[in-house]
Image 1 (cartoon, rainbow, N blue to C red):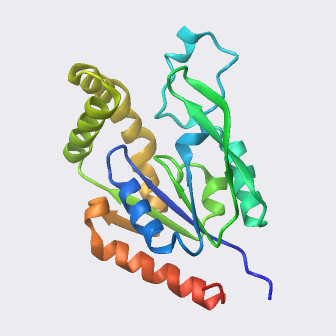
Image 2: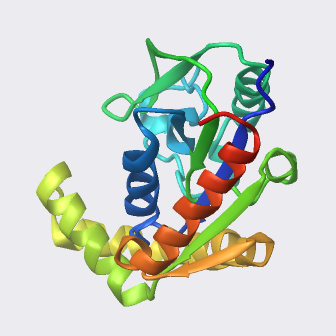
Length: 212
């Protein structure tokens, strides 16, 4: 029999909120069966037409940094059971790489990113909308540890970026999207009860569609 339309789950939340942990927890349950993860930060706009010094000024926490037009196009293709070539962003040169990642369509599509609930056209494609809500002090601590340990940055540069860019962008653009969420998950990946509920909900949807 023909399979029904894939289920699209949007998972939003601030930087360091734990949305990736929630995404990974759901993915681990269904990875052998029916799920693909599309990360919004793979869809930063191509900036090859700009000089390198101009690219360095990019505000990656602003909605205009994302190529949502391409992201929406790719989601439509996946919903029609067509494969896509997911772009790759090269942070070393601050523009899109020439490489892509081949993605096959699956029964569950998880769209994860800080601003996936900000764009109305993206929201319209989602069956379930989640917002991972974590206190600001935990988010900044996680960001400091990540940027120092994984990206070789100094604590001063991380704090300055947080105060001048990340925090104001969160308050202006990310936090307001909480109102669009069907479910708000406090404390991210630490909230096992909420994750278990999501896994059960997805399983119910898939079984009702005779997919699993």
